[in-house]
Image 1 (cartoon, rainbow, N blue to C red):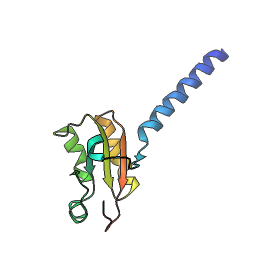
Image 2 (cartoon, helix red, strand yellow):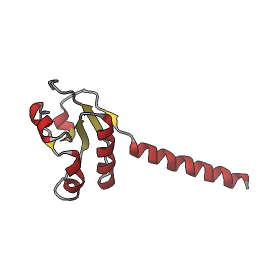
Image 3 (cartoon, rainbow, N blue to C red):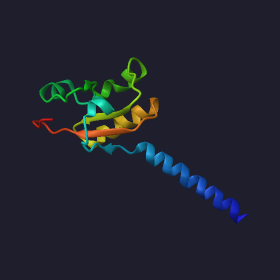
Image 4 (cartoon, rainbow, N blue to C red):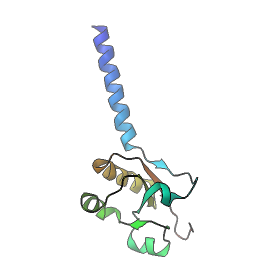
Length: 115
């Protein structure tokens, strides 16, 4: 009976790890040209993205992201999210992973910074 409890415990731990792994968003450490490795999505609003554009990024505000992911967005690579805060990156990662099983990285952009 204790073997059964141990197996159930291991199964629950594995499931918890999978849920945790799905919710995690990794920060991007620049080690090359991001345009070659990622599909880049800028989830900031249109004004912020216009004032400080990220090279090679497609601007899809966070509120439009679920609709675009269902429709026209097709990417086979990992995804790099350009955002103002980590909370928005977590929300975007949750939406992206709901439709695609890829790793999601984020770059935190500050107003007035250059890329």
